[in-house]
Image 1: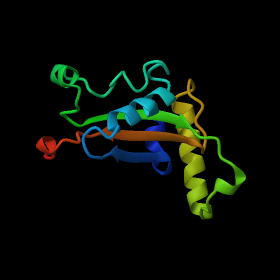
Image 2 (image 1 turned 180 degrees about the vertical axis):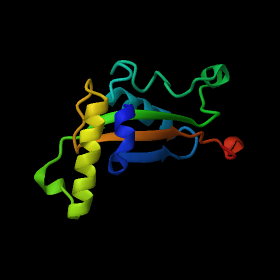
Image 3 (image 1 turned 135 degrees about the vertical axis):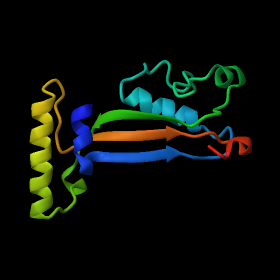
Length: 128
């Protein structure tokens, strides 16, 4: 995963924000499962990002938790955007360098690093 961190065009950062009990952690669990970090049976109930004992006890997220996940996206021809020649060369060079650094992971232009933050929904934790 370290190799893809150098591909700035292939990094996406997002946060799951909603009111309390609207499924933020369940959605996060589903994304973590899709990344292959937890099993499909555990998704939705694992509360993977609720790492504190009081979060497990109370069944709510108290502290924001971040996680990085690797995804390889299968693009359709209609999904391809337009890049300048300079951007294409920069991405190609960065991918070649990343592949050389980490030969165990196949990194392509469709590989993405997703930085995801699961946030608390209760108003008492709005400072998070």
